Image 1 (tube, rainbow, N blue to C red):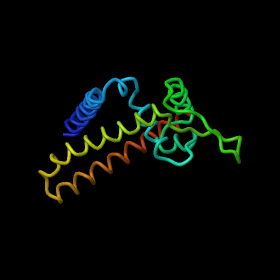
Image 2: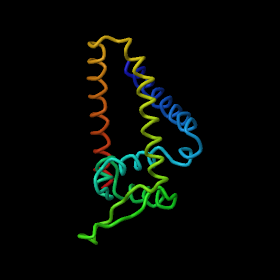
Image 3: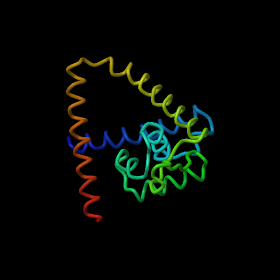
Image 4: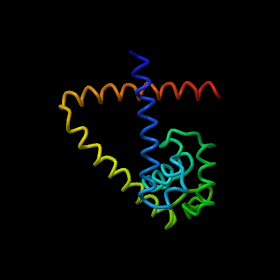
Length: 156
């Protein structure tokens, strides 16, 4: 039974990744040039106040080194730019360029469309079913987060 559940989860992850690719195509060429992580980094920069490498890494649960690599790519793609607070020239922050803002907005619309389409599916379940489903998925997510933390700790 456990193997069936795990296989179903792998199929779910694979399907959501393929759906993500198709949703990108709906929005034209602009989103095709950005990876999943790059789009979510843009999303993070668009949502948090004074985003720097540390805040972005914490928000996305990635390493600062990993975020730094993504940041370099996004600067090269002209989606984000560096700025500094006049009161603190030491700290480096990032903001969206007009290109990055366009991606940010299209990404929000993509997520909104995704949620609206899935809402019809979830309306087929009772509140009790949804509560059970949420509880299981939330516990599994926390389990995976702990595994991720253990792997990170072992790599140090």
